[in-house]
Image 1 (tube, rainbow, N blue to C red):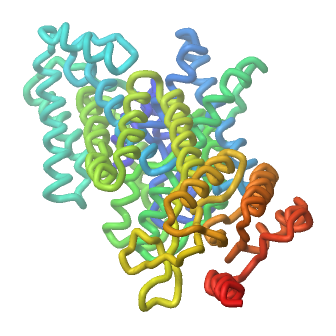
Image 2 (cartoon, rainbow, N blue to C red; image 1 turned 135 degrees about the horizontal axis):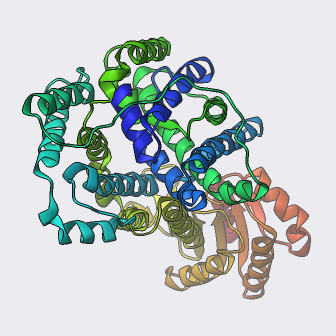
Amino acid sequence: MLVPQAMAYAELGGLPPAAGFRAVLLALPIYAVLGTSRHLGIGPEPGTAVLAALAVGPLAGGDINRYLTLMAALAGMVGVLAVVGAVLRLGFVAELLSKPVLVGYITGVALTLLSSQLRTFTGVNVTAGDFFPRLGEFFGSIDQTDLPTLAVGIGTLTVILVLRRMAPTLPGALLGLAGSIIAVAVLNLEVAVVGEIDAAVPSFALPTLERSDLRDLLPAAAGLLLIAYTDNILTARSIASNKGYRIDANRELLALGAVNTAAAFGGGFPMSSSASRSVVPASLGSRTQLSSLVSFLSVAIFLLVGRSLLAEIPQAGLAAVVIAAALAIIDVEGFRRLAKVSWSETVLAATTCLAIISTDLLLGVLVALSLSVVMTLHRVARPHDAILGEGEGLDGWIDIADRRATTEPGLLVYRFDAPLFFANAEYFRDRLRQSLERNPGEECHVILDFEGIGSLDSTAADHLAELCRELSNEGMEIAIARANSEVLDVMERSGLFAQLNSPTTYPTINSAVATYRRNRSV
């Protein structure tokens, strides 16, 4: 898989195929030493290649030498940022991308990849750079389709997809490309081929850059790192959970940094990992990264003795490799699962996908992240709450939505299921007031169940103090049950206990209720 994917993904990034091989020869041994996944297929990856091309293209201004230099520099910046992140133990950053964002992102990348191969796969002269303009231009000029090119592309794609389904352990991409070479030679088809491949051995040199180049590339490097690292972690953890071992997030960040730093010195480009290349060794029973070292040696030997064969590969065949990879990562099942669980998360995934294909990949991810943060804040600012009642036959208090729960006249037990902070403090007060109005009976005692309130900020502490004063002035007594030590400490330091005779705190709801009942009977 490495040989065709290295070539295809390099060209996808606007680079010569040799750059893909340089990336492979650098990435595999470094990750085998530093990485903690036994199966992760590190190296060229289509989404990363597209992102890098979009970032570097406008800065290069058509100068191929500057383009190659900027690509290497971008890889180096990704590497340095990753190493710094590993030193600072920032591996948790991967958790920022929620499942809906990732489902939408990977699907958007797949659709972008598909549209990027229309020209090479069909021969139609598509020059637009964005998804929808590409589609419009393609369908407007579809009569220009070059039939030999299309036939080679369809034939190669068919071989890859059939073997993927019928014989997944076979190297479908390599066999498909071999078949395309034979078909072109036997049928004497006039189609574009890869052509001579320059030396693929890394030649170590430091990219020469202006300070302005570093400034211009920094946002793209940060975005690339976030996406590449998240993709690596998700793929690695998915396989590791099935195989019974664990992944060290910070070590993975360090390994990614080392791989990309080496790519900068070796004339490569930003790298991540391939889910398809990761699954193959796992499915074949590989237990260590020794499989990556074997792959490294195999590619090196192939380049020494078979490089001339690669020059005859039809470009439509390489396009088929990219299309096959794109079809494999369109996450229809992910959208289906989201639709079953949450419509809002489904909308977030669809919005992410639309942002990816209608803008550029990096901006699309930033839009998706922003939406994800907004949705998270909304959930925390407007969380679930409940009036609790005594569970029939249970030694505890449960939501009165459960028919087994009964309330007690004169007593309101109220639970708020989120940290209490500035964004929801007023909402907490309003919901408690509404609960007092809804709960049957003339309440004279309120128990606030703080089990769901994991933290409390100064704004919320002030609101809570004001609320307690209001309820006390109305003749109600207030108790707080099941507050953790951190919340109690904030309440103490904020002066809430000193200002009021109540609230009184209890370790459990039952102990707070027992005190209420005892005082009522006196």
